[in-house]
Length: 147
Ligand code: CA
View 1 (cartoon, protein in one colour):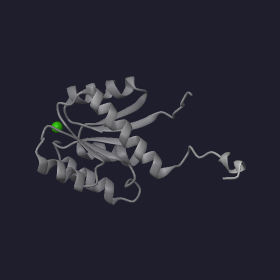
View 2 (cartoon, helix red, strand yellow):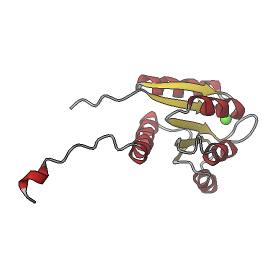
View 3 (cartoon, helix red, strand yellow):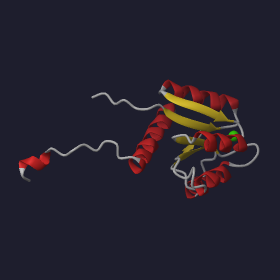
View 4 (cartoon, protein in one colour):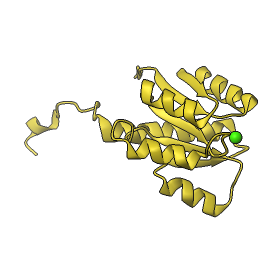
């Protein structure tokens, strides 16, 4: 069975051009549309404007930190449903807990393996789809068998 999926839109908020570039290419190679914000303010504007399916959010940003951006996304009714995955070089357990307590769906410590990134992206997207739209509902045929 072929699953036709609508192109997934991702906003990457990452100030490091090399990291942003790698992320963008990896995700695009997997059929996603990627927009990059280089600062927290840029990222937030992109998120509000385009309402993506997913946000990948760096913790260390030039103008603010990722936690603040995540809180702003999650506290705004218009964007609260967009899943956020943190990307951070800080692998400290308290940083992870802080990230998740801001409402993020996942937290990836840099450097991460591209396969792990994609697996987590897929898992978070699948979860978000389940919550938002039960599209796979089919009429049950089993009802005729009398059980
Ligand atoms: Ca950074």
